Image (cartoon, rainbow, N blue to C red; front, side, top):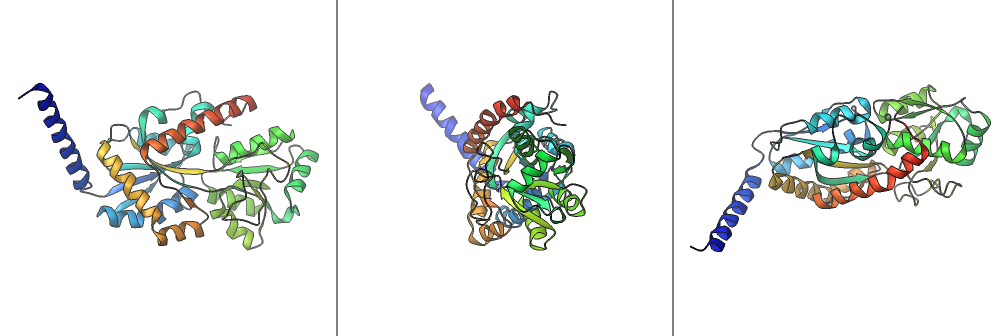
Length: 322
């Protein structure tokens, strides 16, 4: 047997073994760690997707909420988990990209210690004010901030989150000031906003819009570059005089580095299949998520693009995690 043929046969055997490994996986329940609290937007997304994902995988897919440190704690937990195909992560912008710029001593490196699985969804943040303030437009909101520096508090889903950075950029562009109050989840941030502990915030619509419909909050605008098909009546911040503001939350599945590639690839395919199902898509759209689904290389490229886009913005604005 020639060396070339031997190598070819060996490579074929490895491919067959890898395929069999992916088909046999999983043999026990799979956990998806969400590094934010129950009722947060990634938690809601995970629970919508995981019900159907479990049916496709033939094993329970269990959501584990591990909030803390603006998403860093749960993300670090998965980065250090055994790469056995039993642990995955559903995380967001900051722990997966922005915090590599914001934090000097991040306990993990998302580009080194995690592997991409699938970009699951995006959603526009909704900037909203407590209804008792009487502010009913972006212009009125920004005018109030300029006239009353330090009078208002704003909520976020944690230091370095897109809900934090977006408002910090608004403050920098408008030369205004408000006090940042971080919370462990969007649900907690919205509760604080309704109670008047903070006066405004830019948060995911899945938690904001029910309070807007109830008359407790006033929606002012969205942080996406274009009007959202999910919220077509709300203007963008760009339309309202802030042309350089675009801050959109996104949600991605990741796995610990070293997770077998066939397992990663199968998980990615199954997630994409679930996101493409009409019933699942409708549930996500009703909750203001725009489902995506991607391959691992597509997510890796997207994360690198996000880092290239936001790193100079963060550094130029002098943004800090607290």
